[in-house]
Image 1 (spheres, rainbow, N blue to C red):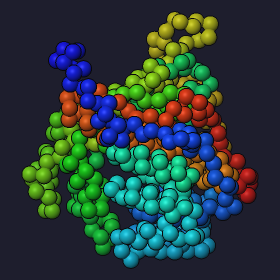
Image 2 (cartoon, one colour):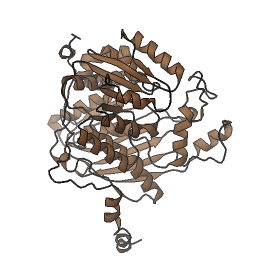
Image 3 (cartoon, rainbow, N blue to C red):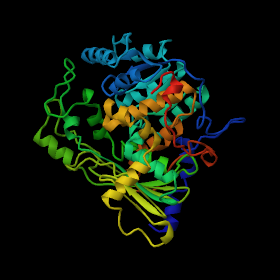
Image 4 (cartoon, rainbow, N blue to C red):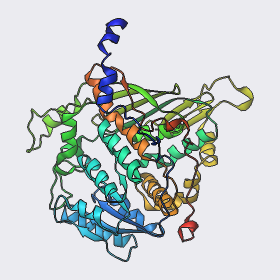
Amino acid sequence: MNRRDFLKGTAWMGAAAFAGGFVRPLFAGEAGGKMALWADKPFAKLRVGVVGLGRGHVALWNMPKIPGCEITAICDITPIRVQRALTMVAQAGQKSAPKVYDAGPEEWKKLCDDPNVDLVWNATPWELHVPIALYAMRAGKHVAVEVPAAFTIDECWELVETSEKLQRHCMQLENCCYGEMEMLCLNLCRQGMLGDLVHGEGAYIHNLKGYNYANWDPKTAHAWDIPGGAYWNHWRLKHNIAHKGNQYPTHGLGPICQYMNVNRGDRFDYLVSLESNQFNFEQFAQRNWHKDWRPEAKVAMGDMNITLIKTKGGRSIMVQHDISSPRPYSRINTVSGTRGIFADYPYRVGWEPADKRGSGVHSFFDEKKAEEVRQEYKHPLWKDHGELAAKQGGHGGMDFMMTLRLAYCLRLGLPLDQNVYDLASWCSLCELTEKSVRSGSTPQQIPDFTRGAWQTTAPLGIESADLAKMGLEG
């Protein structure tokens, strides 16, 4: 197709994009990006309700350890998980037991309406992320949602607009933004050690075939035909059967966005996405077919998805997704600038010496120098609370750090590290990558969920958490 034919064929995209939710106009008197640096009043006590007690264990185990925080309500449809949750909260040191909502599949509405809940922690299967988040905000609650928080552009806009209208926080629980190495890299970027950032690479490469096909036993919530875990009612496998594209982009993407100040000085412009055929899921299913699944139920999602993003500031980002190949786990976590480079899996770093600027980085620092960099530029949050995070555990401590910062900001009335615009822009890849893949890797414009506020919003700072300000010396 030549350029003239291409332009002729895409002339409809402006009106169609508007109709499909890609552009949302501002009304008179409105300002874009209201929630970027918004903060609620401080909470003398932060009362947390948890919906979904599988992945919700992050809140159950960590919140009671944070000064002034309490789990006041829990909700799940699986009795054994409710009992385990009550035990976990007690073991975490909380004296009072949370109220239990477990009478049916819509009990989460009662939890959201509970006057003794300030924050709803939503750790349910994917299809419930948006309904619960919207209901919770409309019930006057702040909400924290597991990843991905939304899957369509319209869902992203609805979360943004509801958060803005009601002035309720809607944060995505992207724990990888709080990993030690990610926060080390963020600090290096803020200190200018890598120069002007040019390119970033992130990924979610994690072999989950066993989890997808494993049998769920509601009587134990801990039994499966294939070792490795299970998703309730096979919800993730069903999603993979129906969709292409990168349906889980935020683990690798979120930290890169924070390094590059996406929504805080720069923003996504457009993306292109390509993926391989699907091989691994089908071969796995043929070898280990579960009795509840038909061989003709083929997975649509390709084994490897590669997405390229261009930002308005001229930076490039590559994001990969592969949950079926026999590869070691990796989020890649690489960013390069005009002066140096940071890379992970394994950790490597290097930059030009100040007296030889322009000579180029031809090799990473040796292990000794890299470790010196790691210690010298360790993020203050990890310097101050790394030992406690290691003790608490959870993906190397990042789960605790995420919970700590969320609780700290809410309790002290501070803006959150991740806001609803981050949630929307990162999650928009779910729909846009699928559209690109299904249309022969055509470019897809990415909405500006901040409506222009990205140009004036200050970058995320280098912050820790002063436990003394929360009412207890650390």
